[in-house]
Amino acid sequence: MMKELLFKTAIFIAVFFSFIEASAQEYNNWLLSEGIILNFDRSPATINCNKKGDKGISNHTVALSDNNGKLLIYGYLETTDNGTAKKNFVIKNSKNEILTSFSCREVTNAIGCKLFNGGYCIAAVLRLTLSRRELHIYMFDKNGNFKDEYIYNDANYSFFINFVQCDDFIALIAYRKEQIEVYKLTSQGCFLLQKENKKLDMLLSTEIVSFDIEQSLDGKIIVTTYDIAYIIDFDKKNGRINVSDKYETNKFRTMAFSKNDKYFLIIDDDKLKGFKYEGNFNFDFKNPEIVYDLSENVITTCNLCWDMAIGNDSKLYIHHQYADYIIVLDGIESGTITEERITSECLTSTHFPLIPRISIVSVCNVSASFDNTAVCYGEPLKITLSGSKPFTVFYTLNGTEKSIETDKTEFLMDNISGKYKITKVKDSACEFLPTENNEAEILQHIHIPNIIEKN
Image (cartoon, rainbow, N blue to C red; front, side, top):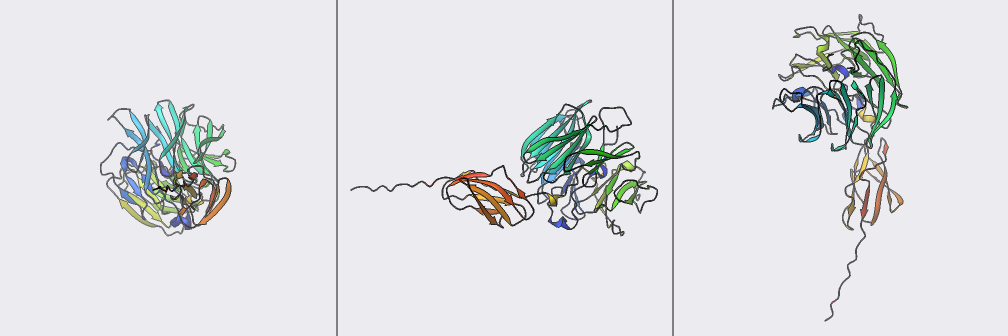
């Protein structure tokens, strides 16, 4: 079985250059195996060990944080009976409460992302039997509460699942035998957008294909399996898929891009090697522009033993699966590389999760909702807002169109009886048409007659 437990450099979180301080932090926490958390609340990140030593949290973990960087929901394969094949893929909230659970033998892959206008999604390929793997898509609201589950079980899905950000939705791309599917994900649900008959050749004749997903550039996905690498182009306007290149090499198996995509990076012979990226992948692997030795304290040469990823702080994080430290490199594109190390005894044999590279800054995060569906006359009715101030809220009162402007995240409506409906909200970045908690009513004022007693 291919070393699919190594997610390698497929792990890309949002990197936004000069906007990073203003970005939301949905990928602030990386959940590693055995419950270890790599927390990007500072730079370099800090390692939080699992004090309980929970061995039930295996690889293929997924975690999402809220806008403040606090862990919101996370999922992993949990062993229920010691040493048996009975396991569950569980998704929990920050209170360690189970939001949903599904019995399976193995998690082939699991990834998560934030949706436009609030809400979150976790997609996973779950192996039920030796020859059956299903695609499960779980949807959550903006507070991390479980909403819907979509199960696709009419074919065997592979390790190949990935998110790509489009103009107003997130696309989930999945591979099954000789077919690539594209799903449109919004806060309203999951919809099949496109499917293409694409056969990715394999060295072994098997229906279940295991891939490493190396998402790198906007609209491009690098897929590797054994000694083959595919460059897959995704057209974000029409959802079409095209396999543009195929390379028979193992050099792509541990790879990343520098934070501004200036260099294509690999690990080869326990060295970080960089090649200037100019739109194609025809690199001269014998003549790298960057060579940085990582071999100190490494016992054995093993290219597949390395994980590599760009962190939330734009630095490059590198880990050898048998080491108790993570190497943090900065200044790769400037030509002056600096190194830091973060160490912990709980790190050995753990692996990074897969975090898609999604530009949070360009995601429309504006939203508006009423805090109640109905209030009595004289009681407050508020609109709760999120996004980039100032806000313009369009609404109707008994069918008549109105609007308000505010720079506050809570707005108190005038005490006027009638039925209200928020139709649109705009902030400084974008606009959104809300469909949840967007209708409310201020009930009619009831006049209580004065009773005059006659003597």
